[in-house]
Image (cartoon, rainbow, N blue to C red; front, side, top):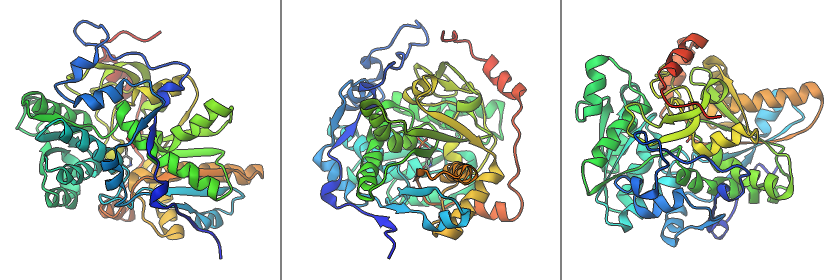
Amino acid sequence: MKNRKIILTENEIPDKWYNIMADMPNKPLPPLHPGTMQPIGPDALAPLFPMALIMQEVSADKWVEIPDEVRDIYTIWRPTPLYRAYGLEKALNTPAKIYYKYEGTSPSGSHKPNTAVPQAYYNAKEGVKKIATETGAGQWGSALSFACNHFDMKCEVYMVRVSYDSKPYRKIMMNTWGADVYPSPSNRTEAGRKILSEYPDSPGSLGIAISEAIEVAASDPDTKYALGSVLNHVLLHQTIIGQEALKQMEKAGDMPDIVIAPFGGGSNFAGLSFPFLRLNFEEGRKIRCIASEPASCPKLTRGIFRYDFGDTIGMTPLLPMFTLGHNFVPAPIHAGGLRYHGAGVIVSQLLKDKLIEAVSHSNPEVFEAGILFARTEGIIPAPEAAHGIATVIAEAKKCKEEGVSKTILFNLCGHGYFDMKAYQDYFEGKIKEHVLSDAEIQASLKELTTPEIA
Ligand SMILES: *Cc1c(COP(=O)(O)O)cnc(C)c1O
């Protein structure tokens, strides 16, 4: 029998997260206060985050201990399986070997609980009563609802309007774990009311929803804020994925030449790829790590590297990142988790230093990839994850043309069982290529007043 699934035991769940900052040749530039343009210290984040997470955000330690309580909850779904994609390989008739790490086995169906659980844990330990957050496709809101419920904390979720309307079952999932969910822009906050007064039919965006959740947290001392992507501590927590995958690849007697993951703010990409980039840093290996983004929200492939706000209203510190401009409102594609204007600072610096790569794919291409995967491997991927699959298929085809066998590993970061509407739209011919013009990107970037980075 073929060895299709490579599994680990609970004892093999890593006991530390890997902090890539310790190994980066160029560290990310510091966040700046938008008023003074001076670097901000950890104190500035204290109204929004518990101190333990702030310390992780700026930590230079290469390894960070995973608390036992967190590992204990991780055992509900971790270690996650690693699969060899024999079916997909055969369909592509490629000499490439394709593996995928499947994060859809978590309670909420994606990689997001890997960070939601530790974030809820550190908040609870510091006496926080409620966490406010945003969610795009509903994945992060679900994960945080699940995690807060574990630690008896309230959870208030601002869900991007277009997803709120198209994914009602995500909302009910969050309600089931005890969370309150509001469509964003909402009239519960200044930020939401401002957008609604200008654009009453706004489909919303992650940037707008972040503004709302931050406002709620900043105005209540018992409430903190949590982010499901972008920030350094989020990427740190997700490295559990790649560390497990590394052990599993060793068990399979193989090692990837190429690591691929979809890219929203960078957390699942970082989670899978950083432990492999560690081998590049430590052993001089040349593992290619490729981030895969939508052609309709192409901050890595068509954005600029510049200081910008993490949200739309401009409440966050200025972060040095690849961005399309914080006012950029992406087309309402189904991959809600990838509709974000910027990228995490660590991943941005790695891309600027050419230590990672980025590609983009059109919407129809992504659904074709997702459907081919479903038909050959069984699992129906989240539309976000299908972006990575499109890149895998492109690389596997290259292997075929060049007649070389490479080993490809990708992150199947979530299942698509709440995304049937998206697949329905595809089958009904409603998924169209959305061509984003340079003029649209330039118009959004022109609104940036921050200085360019040399
Ligand atoms: C949130 C999410 C993403 C995008 O966020 P990253 O931080 O870039 O990982 C991608 N896929 C799924 C399934 C998600 O839930």
